[in-house]
Image (cartoon, rainbow, N blue to C red; front, side):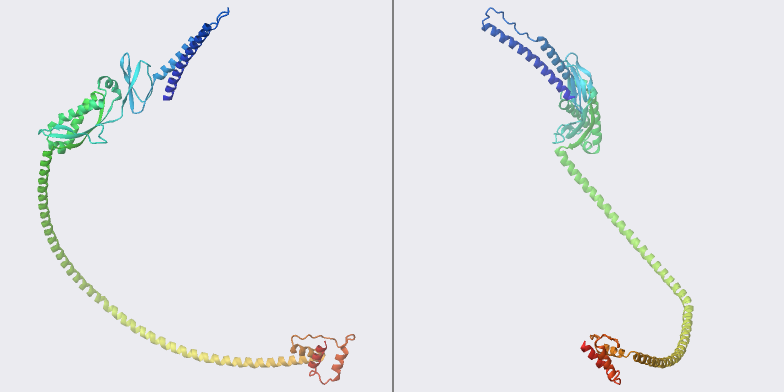
Length: 439
């Protein structure tokens, strides 16, 4: 809204300035043309009329500019934390506060005075530096310094009264006087000791009630009155310190006596407790011994049958071990007899098996020799082949039929085998070797 206000003011000023510029330009043109007519000869021709001044347009634009200015001046923006009061040039302060926001007032007739409605703290410099304490008289006539703080704010509903009837500087002209008068009215009813110690809160509360009542009548709402510190007179402070020291010494002595009495009482109680503890321990020891004796007697009654049973069990175990030993010896002897019989049978079976194997092998060998003789009779060349295979694995042997007609070595082999029939198998290896060499 502030932007609209400033835009209206700027537009009004621009319109007024433009209307003034139009009038000035028209008057300047008329003046220049009048000068030209005065200097140039007319030559019998009538003079040109002077250009008109655009008064109507200038008035219209000036009126528009004035309207813009009036609209802009009629807009008032009250910021947050403040409140305003309207002051008329004709009727003075107008009722009704203006709260934060946008408001319309009568331009040129009403002004808006803003007041801070947030909390105020008196003294103003209490947050940064320690202000001078307020000096008041106690009941004894001693000067006591009080460091006071008041938190208050202005009532927006009473701003018209505040603006009309109160001084402009409320913080500096009104609040300090009311606060000082209230405490100077209350403190003389109390002793110094009561002010700073026993009845301090009562003094503060009574003064706060008086301050709130007086300032509330003028539209100032008091939220809190703080009595931060009490400054005692020098001589009184020294005497009070000495008195406090004596009181502390007396209290210390009383406390020491109480401690001694408590120590004596503690020693008595400890001695009594020790005696009772020893008696209880003796009684407990006697009871323990009685219980141990009873337990041993009961244990003996149960132990004798148990011992007898253990002896009987040992006897039975010895007899059982004896019988087991005899049975084990008999079983071992029988096992040895059985082992010897089994060994004899095993040897008999092995001998029979060997004899049978020899017989079977002899028969098989004889049958094999018969078969080989028959095969050799039918095929005499097998002898040569067998001999040649046994002579060398690297020798090449060629088998040739005995009745080969077109083979050049057939006659040689035939003559070799027919020349000496008695040579037989003895000359076969030599003939095979000769045939291999010829090849």
